[in-house]
Image (cartoon, rainbow, N blue to C red):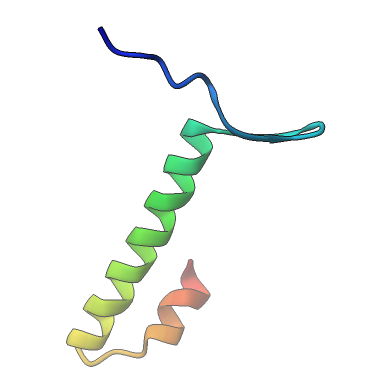
Length: 53
């Protein structure tokens, strides 16, 4: 059997962080980081990429 971690990662008073929010934010940050690395590899300016995002 596996224990369910519950819907919340963190709760501080009325503010709560859910697992899907944490995973979404992690995916956006990882995707941005990978896109910046690819821009540098192609000889483009990574700052332009951040302006688009």
